[in-house]
Amino acid sequence: MTKLASLKQNYKDWSEPATAGKDEFYPSLYLEGKSLDAMKIDTARAGTEMTMLATVRVSSISDNANGARSMSFEVLEAAMTPKTEEKDAASVLFPNG
Figure 1 (cartoon, rainbow, N blue to C red):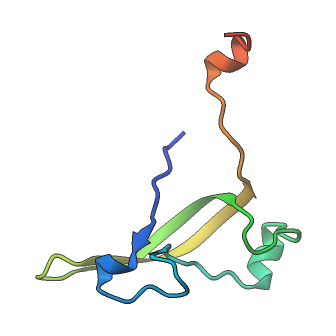
Figure 2 (cartoon, rainbow, N blue to C red; figure 1 turned 60 degrees about the horizontal axis):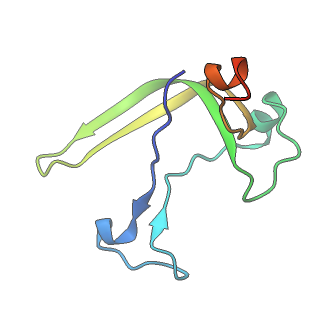
Figure 3 (cartoon, rainbow, N blue to C red; figure 1 turned 180 degrees about the vertical axis):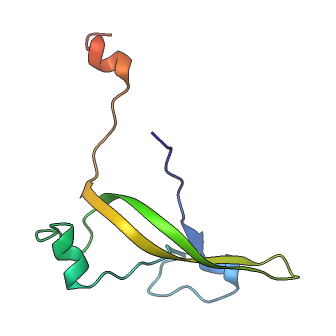
C-alpha cells in the first residue's frame, strides 16, 4: 500500500496570521450530499478521522517563476473508511512477538 504523507502546513509558512490560536492548517476538499451518499457516508461527524482512497484526474498544473506550484484535480472515484492502525504482516502472523 502507498504510504500516506502529511499535508499539514503552518500559517507562518504563508506569512499569514494564525487563526483561533492555531498555527496549522490542512488543504480542504468539499463533497456535497450526493457524493457522500454515493460513498455511503452517513454517520461521520466533524473531527472524525477517515482514510480516503481516490482516483483523480489532473485538470490543471501551475508552475510559477518564484517556485510556487499548484495542481487542480477532479475526483473520479473515491471511498472512505474510518481510520485504523495498520498492522504489519509479521504482527498478524506472530502476535506474541
